[in-house]
Amino acid sequence: MAQIAQLAAEPRAARRKAGAKALRNAGRIPAVIYGHGREPAGLSVDGVELSRLLEKIAPESTIVELTVDGATVRTLIREVQRHPLKPGILHVDFQEIHAGEQIRLAVPVHLVGVPDGVRNQGGILDQVLREVEIEVDPTQIPERIELDVTALVIGKSVHVSDLTIPNAKILTDRELTVATVVPPRVEEVAVVAAVEGAPVEGAEVALAEPAEPEVIRKRKPEEEAAEE
Image (tube, rainbow, N blue to C red):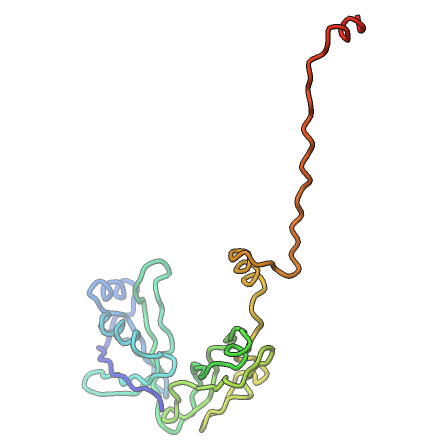
């Protein structure tokens, strides 16, 4: 089941840029809530509380119970806007959700086990896809999707079609690769062997033949006289 977190919010009347800047200066983050037939409404949340929350959860798959004016609504965080140059959050979007409706969201994929190709063949596990999009009832949102990769050998892969998610419809292309085991990198083997002084197969070192030294001798007086 999905993880559930709590966060308090306050209504925000002013949605002007100047108002948003004043909120941030006061330590609060501008936000908006929408969905389930409601008109988008402006909110603000405490910046420190929001940052702490985002450090502990997977925002894309965590239900956030948002309390506004004493009323609590269930939401998903749909977007977190961050400053491109400085640390800090600029804005956050919440979508209200209700049981019985189908929503779309991305869920992280967690690989379980050590592949046979890594353990016994020296291969490298490469996770190509880290999340998949699903359609699901809010009450059935999985916290994450676990995929067992212990049987993978070098050259073999697992795909989206190998995933099983109860009570959810997978929207991501089923032919996409989730993870694969690749051979060890030849370059790394060669570098290690060279450092250890071991010969590297296929590597040839050409040594230049030493040039013979040129001999310079002093000419005899009779040789000089003959030239004159």
